Image 1 (cartoon, rainbow, N blue to C red):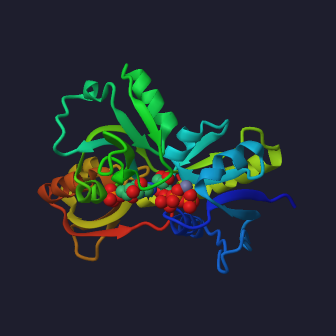
Image 2 (cartoon, helix red, strand yellow):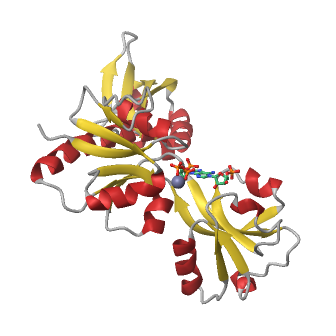
Length: 285
Ligand code: PRT
Ligand code: ZN
């Protein structure tokens, strides 16, 4: 039987989180002895463990059908591949930063300056879009020390907590790109592989919907149920069950994480009691 081939980072920030996500989808991929190729016993998929920099090219060439890597790498490499899903982990941003003592008065301040980065293509495009002429110093790592050693006047690097910038006396001045891990695919897949990808996406979507939502159970006097139902739309509408205490009901529904606290406040005001919030394992829409 035909198997999907998926490229996963061999080691580094994305490796374990990628494997964890597939495990949540019921697809356990073993990377136990740090082999180059892993198999899953639960889904027709074979994993290739690679450096993230190489994944776009391998997916474009069809050596792998799918890949998991940062959007920053996808855009930098500019290969002919398709982004299928954002995966919600390894969030970071690609930003410009300058030494904290430098007088930065907006992007124009970078005209005629040297900027060190591992992302020359994304930076080049950003400078073009903003009509800035600056010299790009390409480095493969340790970009944050470039200003301190006199190699550049500014840097363009990935930032997550900001502590690397702080330690190196740099301040973030412009955000060029918001990035996170994404699932990419080859652009020319057989119908059989496309079917397998659809099955995989179905599982990924169920896991991601579950993460974004909570199951809520609450009690309310019957005369408050109509008002509470308006606050709790649920997947169709809330389940309403009678309690053994006469005149009371139990309501069950699903709340989106983003509106969670606002809804809880509104529910309390509307007369809900004994509110329980439970995580959802998978959610099939
Ligand atoms: O060996 P391989 O080439 O596969 O790995 P790599 O060393 O190129 O990549 P890796 O494992 O460091 O990162 C993989 C991906 O994780 C990146 O392409 C991003 O999409 C994502 N990611 C998320 C990050 C960060 N957060 C991050 N903070 N990648 C790098 N950093 C570095 C950044 O370059 C800087 O040096 O962490 C430092 C900044 O972090 P803070 O927390 O101090 O701001
Ligand atoms: Zn890399």
